[in-house]
Length: 348
Image (cartoon, rainbow, N blue to C red; front, side):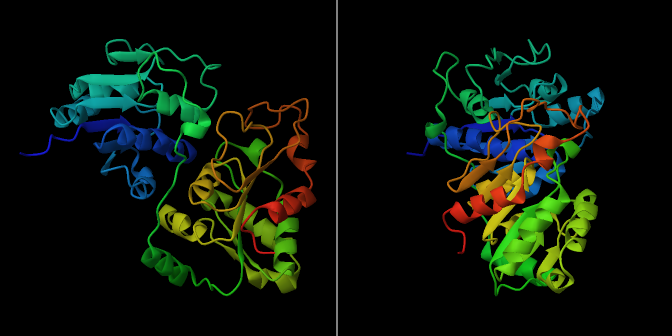
């Protein structure tokens, strides 16, 4: 007797790095309920993350730029997927994100209400933000019955990215990175804007301390973050600069994931790389300023969150509306250094 066919599920994924990492909680919950084939429709840059999630069968590239409607192309994409799926989950709240599953004729299309999506979605959930304060709760709740109680954080399987040792070795060789000393990863950038960026001189103070204890420092980020990384290097004593490597803009996302996986600790702004580091199980100090860990905290076993909690924060603005950025400038590097020292697994 043949085994029953596995359910085929299409997920329209988010477009931000951190959100995609956290979406793994939904994939894990679906697989926990019943083994299934999960395909994720998302921008092509997401493929390196999705390929490291064992719950996902394949990534389907979404060939549209951010904000592009392109109805004709979306209709063609949807029709090309007809008959392929039993259920769809739409994680973004936009109307356009629900179009492809609709045109694909997926029988059950689930998502939060969002932008007037009645008809496009036929399993529409009304979001109570107080009932579901965390993003991961909102993701996992879509896999549950609509009247189920909110999933408690301790019941949610946190994101866990897998890495391949051969890929790690290849990334080390490509970037000419030695493995003879403890490595601190620094993630000083943030796509959201300046109000999430801990000052470069504070990062430099942490780097000086780590290198002074006999370690090395790797600076991660995109090409946009390279100028900040260079400022951090310039703030180091000349004798220490050879112990710091700028990887911002020099690695692919695949390589960044692989290299982050072999760091001994990470210090990061509230960013996508912060969530990647947590999902890799790295000891992590996350620095918060204009945002709050109350919605999208890094989910890891060795995580410390450092924030001042000033009266004016969190403001959730891209730039400080008061012009002083005190929520980050006044957060002294000694606090982060001490938090690092307290984390389990960090070399002493």
